[in-house]
Length: 359
Image 1 (cartoon, rainbow, N blue to C red):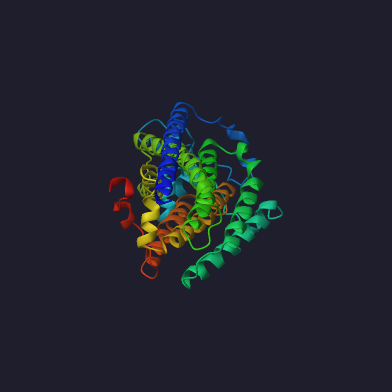
Image 2: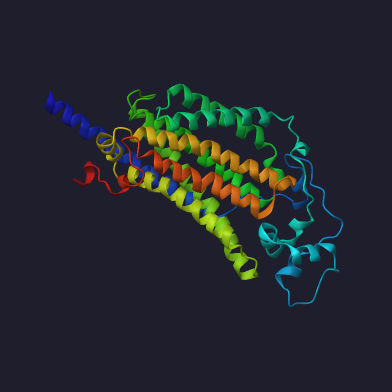
């Protein structure tokens, strides 16, 4: 009987290794396609119609080029915006150097948003779930399968309510939204997958492992698509003399946060027994992964809401970007690292652990 079990185990491992090879080939093909082409860019004039009414702008505007080339011939008549840009300090001073037209957007009240929209209900449900998650994590309570189901329904509904307006956005915002779809899909699948290593599995591992591999390919492709565009955009801004160091730092912090998940994915692809080994040594590792994915789901969606606020003129420019990177990347990552001091899990040490493939 023992010999039969060993033969069966070897057969399952062979099948899994074959699936991994095919997954890698699909991943490489998807990345090549992403590197070679981009999604259709929406017309600039349609930008203001997405999600919310267009923000009110002052009548006098300063062109971006006239500020990017201060020594060149002026292409715009003197305006009140130029005086505002000269005297701006703090976040507005950074905005004036990067894109003076942001100073032309009059501050809009939150009440100017179109709150009678399906995504308002979904966003409210997501916020309530996030508040519950923070309370649960603070009290070191493990998540449940019911919470996973609720998260999957809420965030699928939230993104579906936003999807019809995405083609009206500019390229910069479309890239962020479509990449977020891939990250959200992976977060939901990873939630189900990590539960399979906990005391109450949602699915058998024979189904969860292939599903995780497919979602991992989607995640990696989303990262390539997102960072290819946004880091390329930062390089272009450096060449044009309008690079914002703080935005670059924020983008770097997001890159590091996503790199942690990329590392998790590569360890899984390298050795199918790696996570099983980690969980044997750190029994609460599944809980930490689940908490991470649940926070990722909300914070990714919240970052997109801040984009909407920027488009609408309610909360714009560098101040908006600061909240995005500090509030949805840096602070939550620090909180999750801190959680590992109170449960039997690790935040980074497991990346240096080896599975049975390397024994």
